[in-house]
Length: 260
Image 1: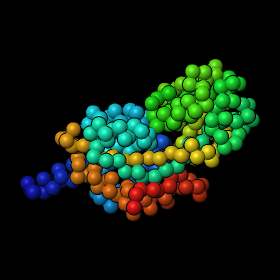
Image 2 (image 1 turned 135 degrees about the vertical axis):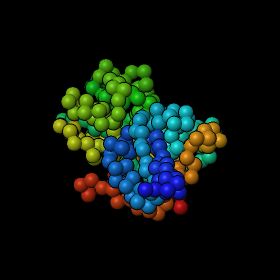
Image 3 (image 1 turned 120 degrees about the horizontal axis):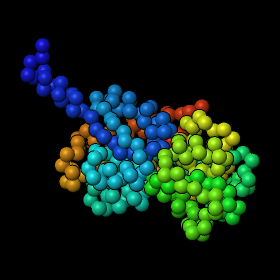
Image 4 (image 1 turned 90 degrees about the vertical axis):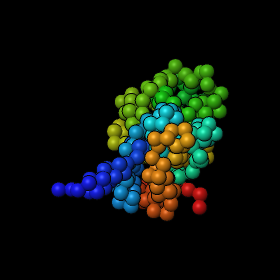
C-alpha cells in the first residue's frame, strides 16, 4: 500500500498534463501523434490537444481553457499577445499552402500564382470548397481572394463547409472541387480520388506556425511551469529535430524555424 507521501507523489504525477489548443492541420497531418510521445518521454508531461480552426483555438485560449496555443495566423496571434493573453509568441515551424483540385483542372489554374488561379475559379464559376471556419487556412484563403479582387464575387461555385481541413478535402474529392489546403494535411490525406496539387511555389503561400504560453496573469489556473516546458521543448533542439524528422512517403511535412 502507498503511504501518504506515495499518494501525494502519485497525485503529482497525474497532475503532469497540459491542454494545447491547436489547429486541425497539426493534428490531421499526423504531426502531434509523432511529436507528443517524444515530449512525454523527455518531460513526463501528458498533452491533451484540442484541435480546432485557429480562430476557435485562439478563442479557447482567451477563455483560459488551454495552457498553450499552437496555431498559424500570425496577425491573430500578435493580437492575442498585444491583448495580454500571452507574454510572447515564438515561431516554431513552417510549411506552405497548396491549391488542390481535379487533375483535369477545368478552371485552368495550374502554376505558381494563387491569385491568378482564384480569379480563374471565380470567373468560370467552378466549385471551390472553403473551410469557412475562421481557421488559419480560412484566413489565408480570404487574404488571397482579397488580393484577387474577388472578395464580393467568388463565383457561383463557392461553398463554405464550416469544417476542418480533412472534411473539406473529402468534399473536394467527392465533388471534384478546388480546395486550399496546408501541405501537411494533404500529404497525410488518404481519400484523394482524382485530386492533385495544382498551384504551389507562390511565396504568398508560406504558412508559419507560432506557439504561445497562455498568461497566468489573465488566467491563474494555467499550468505555467508545464506549459513553458512544452514551449521550450518544441522550440528547442530536441523538438525542432523531431519536427524535421516527421515525414510521409519520404517527404518532410514541416520545417523547423524557431529563432535561435
